[in-house]
Image (tube, rainbow, N blue to C red; front, top):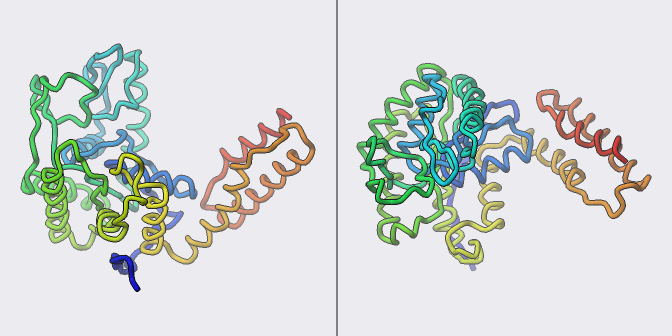
Length: 330
């Protein structure tokens, strides 16, 4: 008896390997997959503007990176004792204006350089609804808890999304013809919009992505994270307590399907070997000062050095540095 409706995903014609440079932009799904990639030692930059939900804000962020236009004090507004950028998530907001500018520009410089030579872009659209700031008319990536009366809420059309993204994809592919652009739609439902409105919003995103894939068939691809959660994991045990966000179990399953689709045997082997080391790095000893723990730390360093020797294209500098500091401080 089959108690699920499995989502069939064909093995991709290309691999995502540890040699690739990967950039991720978008909503929470990009964050979830990105953290898994980071944990497993991929070369990855996750949401350099923080979490962004709508296609226009993601487009604006990537276009600004391509234009190499950094940020100054005029790009920030004060609210609730913090300085905010409408193009960034609240995690970049600071009490000191200069600190806020420095924070976004540090992230910007690295991402701007990487975007022009990246191997993989993973883009997650979360919602078709946007908020437009009444004072300037700009679509914001985050309202930063500024009163709703200062914004106008709109729903993007398929044409608005595809026309802007057609321009962006043309630029990206002209700069980097071998670039692989992997689209997903976030499986997290925006129930504050209402059940029907959320469904309309997600449908617009799906149709927009489909249109872009027809126009750029050699460079654009789709991973069905939305369909896996909505159609295969149709049970609230796969959701967190808010009944909207996927549980850890669901995230792990989607990660498994992602790996089955895009990882080669070598990549799976690397992940398997690294996970054994990662478990050691996560170990919490009963006695920090024991000789046994010191031997354990040194053995883990040896394992990391052997791993680096076998896979010279993966750096474990920070992990070794951390373990060395632990040994020194014992």
